[in-house]
Length: 471
Image (cartoon, rainbow, N blue to C red; front, side, top):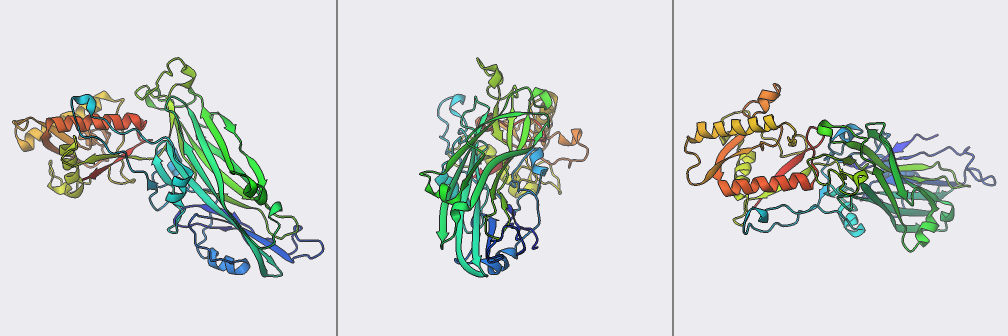
């Protein structure tokens, strides 16, 4: 009996294929061992030459195999799901933010774009079904997608007689903020069949599973049309092989500081290609990137009470690091603060206070920023230390000309200027201060506040965000 094979490319997907010996009961009674079907579950974008079958397929596809028993998490995953299984070694594709308008009149004119809450199948395919290896796509914390490629090779007495192939895309969205229901759209597309092979008996089972939650006692309700089991031919004959799955965790089941009522979960799509009667070959199971949904009812975020629907208070999001974008453009209201952060990122040792080992966080997934909301004293201490350093290095009159003391990392993060006083293991003086135009500094703060709220970023180590400076 040949061993299980797990195919993995760039940390993208995992899937199993088992090839049974000729004595398998699945072999034809009249012609034992004569017909063989081998099924593969592969990353989207994997190059497979036309007509590749049998031992030749194993040789071509098998040299990149890795033994694993679970799907893969995206590189940007935050919270407990990030440690559930292997994390991708390459970054996910990300959506471009909506351009912001320049500041016009009054503070109310300064905001941050609303995150996307929908994603089309065409958009998902364009992002992850590419020759460079299918990557997970994070359009926003409310719209993500993944997928997998299923291929079967069919032989008779070792000679190729045909191939069958399809692709499955899974889109996860949170369509409405004041609703705790997550929607998962499954689309089976890209059908290819070569040869006179019995694909009417090649069955595919498609399901969405939740193998783990935090806390473990949390229970969900579900809806939609999954799981579904249909043959290759039946799926191909459908006008649209589209299926839905909805998942909802009611409030009151979670944990978290400040009664945030947080539930994290692992959402793992699973596609199983069954054995085919009369043909050697065991079932194969494909597991695309898992998704990392999260539910909360934090009082400092939108819909904290549910209004007239208290059973629906809070909302849902996907637990991935989002990126705050600041711009140094002349029309950007936050340009002064953006220029300061850019200097802190690119020339940290030239910033104040001096520190030859300064490593400014917030630039990559290994050192994200973490929101500080619940500890008002620590926020105040962060701000106080920043101001005292502005006075020390830029003089008592640093506010002259209408300037504020700008600090990075932000005072509203655990990585702020007072971090070393609260965390003895952290680097001292690992921040930067600089006097900048007061209006620009305050506008940057308003933009940050909108970003944190709109992206449902919660206080503490189980969430986080990055900062990117554009020009």
